[in-house]
Image 1 (cartoon, rainbow, N blue to C red):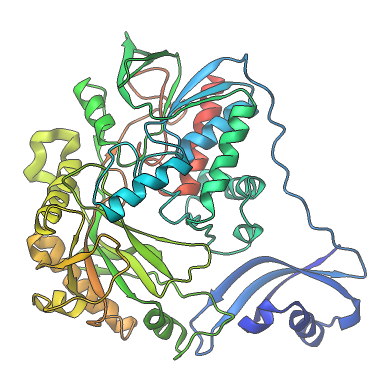
Image 2 (tube, rainbow, N blue to C red):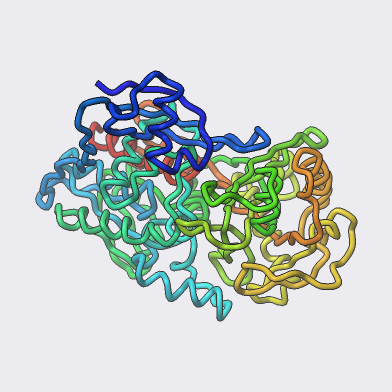
Length: 516
């Protein structure tokens, strides 16, 4: 049996198996020649010491062979003749729900408004280069959902709501690197996710499931208090007694449809702010206390939160070595987000910096009822579009200029492909958000000296941090509290926040459907 240990070593030692064996022999009573293999089970960086160290959980094999355990996918049966169940949306919630249904012997039929991962690329080029927004195929909509082309971070705090390790193992089984099962903050990368998603699709189709792309759902068919099916933009009708609704946090037409049909939904507060870009070297210098980052350390992330005037101001979806992307889902709006490739090799680092909102903040939009937070988002996104020149050019300010209320005379280069325009961001953001951000940035600089620099640039806005609504469901059956057979699922329904938690919720809904 291997012996498991928690150790702290230099980044160089952690990256070098020979040095790791030497360390264990010297500090933990092993003979160097008896160690046959050291398996790293968990890995994280501790940047608090002056010289950062790696915290490792290792399994030390002595005088016994080590064989890497192969990740096996479940033995998915052929469900081509099984009971058909509808899934609306092919994001992580929808895809993992489909796979779980197959595992349980049910036939999933997925309706996805967007294109497959390969065909989505042309529409991403369209928004980045030509400023053209395809309402059905963009960074948010299409196979794999928002996570496919906006980073692929896998960290979640939702450990009590499902088996995180199971989701990570499935991702590895479909082609992800095993490191995601080791790193404290696992990340796949925008360049690596598409083939993984394509492998999932192939499995679903090979086992008898169906996936219909370019199929936008425009109506829910209700009989009494039960779901009976859906209708699509193309005029097709799909009948079903069970529908998993996994449309993501930006499917505003679905939220409007539910409200119009008097299907109960609830306002859900979210966070809104900006996306800030620094050089990665600057963030490394702050976080690692160094002039130049060691080749054995990953590009440094940061996570920071402060209370300002009784509100939380915090970093969100931080992307080391990453890029800022245009994530509008409709013409006439600007939305920013960030992503990194698997190597996180870009020279810039970016993060959403957002302000916690409360129900009373949406009072000016109360005539919209549960859609008030969504309308709040829309107003900011439209202002950004207008001030950006009615293109995808984003309004921007240098960071110190933002805190001092100055229009930036010029702007640094940015990773945001459609370009940026110097604007007073107080003209884009509500006053209380703008003021909270100013105070937040000043507080950030107290613990991250050098963060508040005019070499950093603020892009606006960051509005799609989570769903602006929650679709209420019974906690036991996971069905909508009003419509039987309708299963609100994932991030868009207000029950997840990211790839892993959405995947777990998809599996939970699939189990509930199979039971029900």
